Length: 531
Image (tube, rainbow, N blue to C red; front, side, top):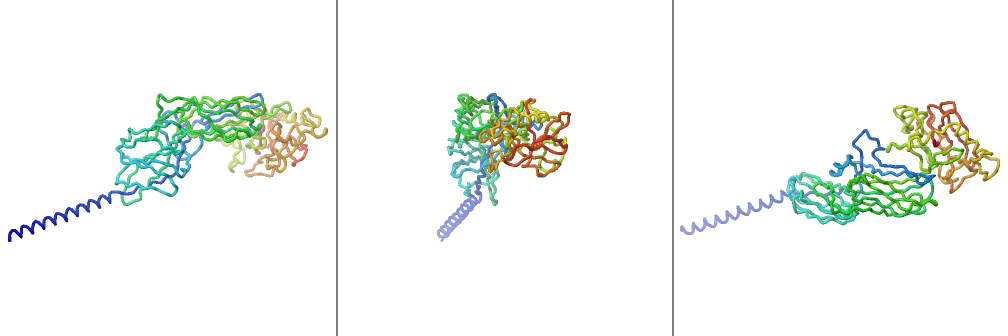
């Protein structure tokens, strides 16, 4: 009887132990399930950094890099290297420590099919996991993680050439090498706390790490490019090392330095734009661009732009504009376009074509009228102090406002018996002709040619042409003169200011050209004359 009782107690104990152990196991399994929660990966696109200057005292002219040099006796080159504008600050920490500029960013969508890594580390730097994904719009992969705070890192490539990375080590020790900037490596890092019971979205905005450059050549003011030789930019190092800790770039001492070539979709015409290229410039301040055997008309020579500051990870536009030095008529050299002021770059210059409207200027003010409704009349706070804005065109002091005498001389020399009248239609009319710049029906602007009795056709850029941009006569909205009359500012023979006024319809001989008194509250176009 005792034996039976003892056996019964043993069985009961075993069963109870089994139940307790099973319960603990289930509780442990349930607890493990609860402790894992999903992190949803959402790719928002890729940013390209652009430079802005932290020093507010510096003008936009200081931020952009430019130079003006002669191409030949009749033409000059304006070369500008500028960072593209954008929003949302994304900073390359090492680049900024070496270059006193901040960076903002231009965001673009990631291409469908782009491969990318997601790596997860504890905030202490301890490795947790990594996965490779292929991006498709609307498809958001998930990672299961226990609650806690993690460091998330993503790496992608614009050419789908993902680098080889040994993720499985402390984050501070992870770096990788890239031997070609064209792979366009992108990077993202963010700390995030993963919580149970909420939707954990990781918004990934990748950042292009390498410098991108686009080269543009514009010759609209002087004609078509005949041919262009090899174009390249330097320096471009052969390799770079990227830190996973912060996405910063460093360069091995063994990296070779060379130039990188641009490729073009077209090599003739008036606008030539390269394909974007990526380079490793190593935050240089001695960058250089060379275009070999650049030919326009019968003139062929190289173009060079040196001593450029090129910052890692920034997107640049490199622009070469060929401009006519001026148009020689009436014993004066007139600017090849109307006067403009670039508020972004803080620089004075001329329109690229005679057909284009310039800014509107009140007399004896250095800055143009604002056309936003806040600048009806002249205001020193808006339009600057007294002076001649033509004199501000680089090189400063080269140009000036035309005088009343200059226009009198122009009208005389293009008159029926003038020395600048070719009499190419008849012997009795002046050499002044009203027409649309590219001819009737072309959609270009109306104005008056000087030095010809008809529309000169393909040689239109060789002639002085005053576009009928009109004027703002104490008004904030466009009045009846704009598009129908020419109103240009002059200095007066006896002091003060005068107006050169032109009228006429398409096809008219240019008899409607006269000089009158300028009005203090009117804003005019300006066509400068060379000193």
